[in-house]
Length: 130
Image (cartoon, rainbow, N blue to C red; front, side, top):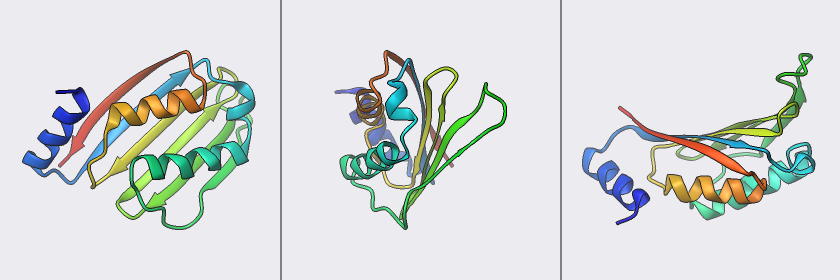
């Protein structure tokens, strides 16, 4: 049984409020993380991939006076909660959070994001919210 299958099984058994996955992806393609249209495309494709229904449009805003943290930030309401992310220009890193009260495969979700942003390495943390 895969990690994702084990987590979804545990999720269904324990019936928490939701599942939260923090995905940190490093050494991403700078052109992709600096493109609002590509970030919006990612969100649409991710929602299809994890079978989540988007609620409203994806919000993508470029801001930050401090070069250490400047870059795009994204939010996408989904009917079961929220997907958010920050795209750090200085380090070409993606910090993505997926929170949903509907179960989804967190590690496959992370791999999907890593592939889309062409990251070299990543860290994934999954927790249940009660």
